[in-house]
Length: 85
Image (cartoon, rainbow, N blue to C red; front, side, top):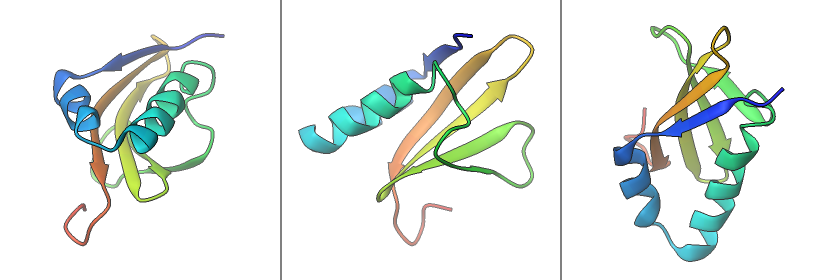
């Protein structure tokens, strides 16, 4: 079944600042989340309800998943540094 992927405006702005090669790879991974949002290197974040993170090399995609409505809401896309978490 297809999931609805919603990318927040802040996440779109963050994605636009990355180099084109990385931006294309991350955008493809976000689009692939419509098929299976829990595929890949996914970890549930502590302290949050339905908050997840997907690792894509040195980048992290933070999202919330609603299994009843079958929606994925991407809240942030950040480059992994010592202050990411």
